[in-house]
Image (cartoon, rainbow, N blue to C red; front, side, top):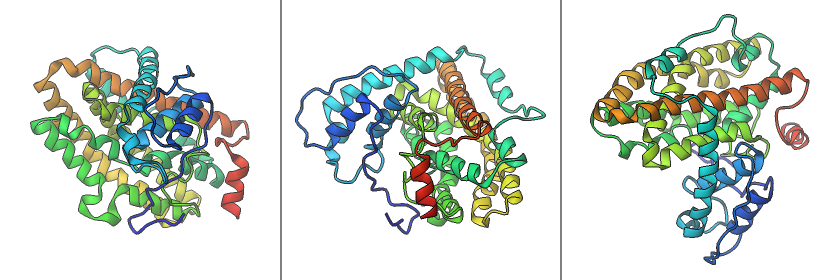
Length: 340
């Protein structure tokens, strides 16, 4: 697949199923609409099968799939199935976090930098290999190819200062009106600089559930007005924690003598997200809760859910690498594609 002038080709093939639920979804989307019910197969809410099934249904609201009828996006039976899958995923998320309404403590905790650190960016900075770095790029491509898109769903669900401030952050994410400075475009450039495919979702079949679940969470929060507080909490958590990790990633890429395009993606985020942190905390969250204080627990939930899923991804990456194993699902296909 050849990337388009704006950094990626949004037309992709349906993903490979990973179990009976995703097989039912992929098989259904491969056929003409019939109006028949689509059976829900119970699955691990954080497992491969449910995660790729939900991502596939959400992707109909983004770029869609090659050869799939666009009208599937609002098919009542597919939406019924998606609702069942969403409830399983959302219920599992709520059961894994503490909840509550102590927003100030949650926000303050995001600003704490533990010394010495032990996260993924610390590992890559200090001792990560180029192969591990490229695996990390593949994991994150599922999100960064649509960076800022899931957050845009919340814009019409906000009012006043909260809306204006969030749009200001989104404007930066979308390159300030310049296509070649969109963060999704910069990530496509990063992939090219790393000798990888810049195409949209090119590595979806390689990436396991932990990274995909993070993107599912953003789509879930963005597509439901009732979860607008959780989306704002997630967005704030992402912006607050990005600048320090981006700085470490830039250091890691300098140590590995990576292509400047790889470094640029992270240096762009160091300054931008330091500013976004203040806007999100004061102007977006502050204004939102002035308008509707009842959303405080939802904002807390969004922060906690983000931290939970990010910790799952970090654990997967680090445990794989420490065991001398690939963190990707399809290591053989990955090696062939990178060396072919």
